Image 1 (tube, rainbow, N blue to C red):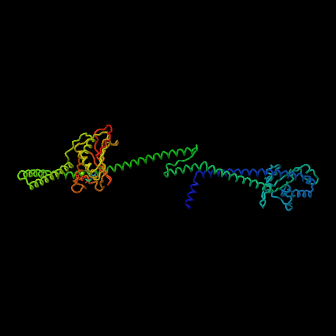
Image 2 (cartoon, rainbow, N blue to C red):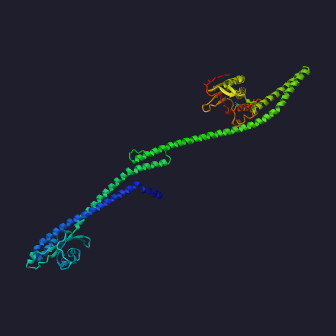
Image 3 (spheres, rainbow, N blue to C red):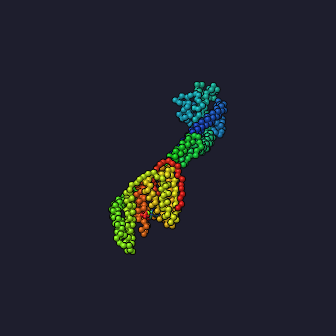
Length: 551
Ligand SMILES: Nc1ncnc2c1ncn2[C@@H]1O[C@H](COP(=O)(O)OP(=O)(O)OP(=O)(O)O)[C@@H](O)[C@H]1O
Ligand SMILES: [Mg+2]
């Protein structure tokens, strides 16, 4: 908490607004201080000058009023008059010295007869280097000093000059050469002046203080609106941008440098947002491309494994088929020979018929084995393919015709939908028909309770070089765990000799020879779709209208 407060204070003290405010305040204090000092010292000087002039006039008045009494040498009366004048408010004391500095008269009785120090400030002005000076400037005639109680006193010396009346008078003989007879020293209290000065000073300081406070408030408001607020707005905007809020904009309707800065900031934020969006879009594209490529690679890998597996299975099947072919042909031929011999050499009887029937059974089973062997060879290496441009629609139609009986028995509706720019595909028509029939038979067998069978063909703009042929049914579907095995020879789920497991391997072998691909998509209890990808024959032709066929 203390650390945070210290950090906050440090931020405040380091801020431009605070520095400007402090500078302005310092300048203001300096100006007002200087002004107050000059003003009050000038005021003091003016006051003191005025008081000095007043005091000199008063002292002149005293001198003139005492002049006659001095001339008549009426000392008692003179002393009495000085006492009366000395009682006047503002007058501290009145003295008269003779030229030697002896106090001849004083309102303070105790001083009379004392010799003043000629080197003291009051005398020094006239008696510098012990040479009396006749005329002194007003400034030099006055002196201000402090009493032991700290009060200020203004002393004013007024020389009493020798005049013809003085040296001609019989009462006291002053020599004619003597210019100064003595000095009238009037001392006036500056209490009232000091009080007035203190009052003026107080007023000046109070007014200055008030003006400084007002100016401070004004400065604070100005600094807040002109500097702190816009800078803070810009600062918080930058912080938000740095924190990742790229949609933040600074709302500042000003046309000064701050306004320009805010609009530059907003432009920068917009550019950043666009760059970020572009980057994000690119990264999304890239990741989806990576995903797609990974999937493609996985599929390719799977396909290669499958091809490898099929190739090795094919080799084995080919050698087994080759080895079986000759003995099977021998069994068929010998069973035919035996049948003929039995027919020719044995009389017609129930026993003869039974033997002939059994020999026919041997032959048909051997022929069935022969068929299997042929299929195995067709899967393994086939007989090569006689590839030519063929109408897909015609082959599909033929396949449907050939399996129509099957479909009718199971109550299946078949539909074909050929949407190709070009109806022709590159294939060996006999082999492709065989493959299509195998797929249709499987579909029919997967829908014993009836259903829908759809044969469709399409080509996409993305891949105009190839044609996709789909055979879909609404049958039992293929469970995921056996989907990898269905193209292997002798894999079948059909019990009681109903299936050998060579239909799909043969289809696979045929599609391979056509440089195509076959794969399956299936949903258990929903249906199965076999998809064949084959190279298209030609490129541009009108779209072949879809035809519907109901079995
Ligand atoms: N349309 C389909 N719906 C559901 N399962 C299918 C479908 N087509 C193939 N299968 C599954 O694939 C297995 C293999 O099929 P394949 O055609 O190779 O052999 P088969 O049909 O069992 O026997 P046959 O050699 O007589 O064709 C089938 O046993 C079946 O389980
Ligand atoms: Mg089959």
